[in-house]
Image 1 (cartoon, rainbow, N blue to C red):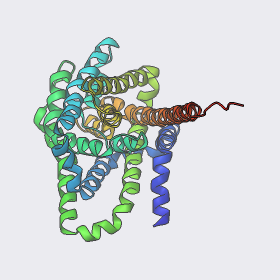
Image 2: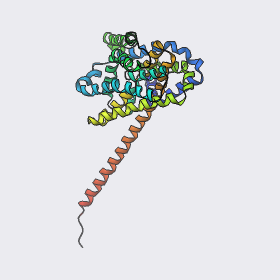
Image 3: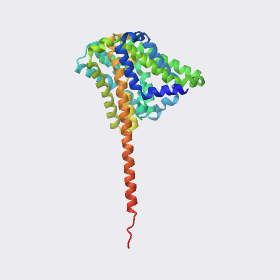
Image 4: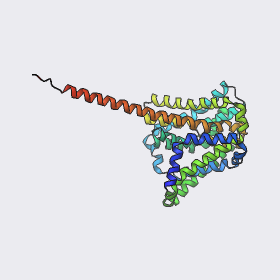
Length: 335
């Protein structure tokens, strides 16, 4: 059990480095990882299954406690992110299939890694978990809808086949996970501590397989695809912050919303791109897996440093006030 906890903590502490090393190895030795591509869909289903198996009623309590905030996250995610991807694709004049892949990244639900990043950034974790769950459950409708609306400008989109794929990859595994949790809850609690590690390994398999099969495309597009995916991800943080500040949300909620809006389920985007289009359509998903995790880790680190500086400033201010108060009570001595 201690070993499992250490491995879980390692993924939390060094997530960005593990992702970069995995992506780097897949780029340098693509033949050693390309075979993992056939497991991408199965790994995504396993991730969704673990999500369902670990879901609790409390995970959805935020819907009733803060329904507007959850709605804000989901609405911003599905309305702004596909639009941002479309605008960037037009600005950079991306080829049709690469543009479609970028829009696909913007149209998929929030990624489970957003919950980890929110935790590291000291944000509102319950809000993040609830928003991820709700956006994921709504994805069979909203993902193909957003993709058809924006992606249709580049390539004709088959709405129902894609919706069915998302149901098979997302909803069915979640349903079985919930069923297992319901029927064997006392037993699943014993293995629950293993699931984050297994889920993280599945995410790395998805990343390695996607990057390996797209190695040549990644190299040929060079810095352009990384820049566009970076700007798209950054726009998510900006929109999340802007909406949250306008609505006067707390620092913790603002961080959770910004992270949830910006960090997408890039594995699902890559899988749908490979299944319904071509490897080029999975390019943005492969790049996003690296960019989202790296930028998210940097953002979380900046949040922690900001909190530390604020705490130091508050402590200094308190000491200064205490010193001035003590001075005010010192009476002059008359000789």
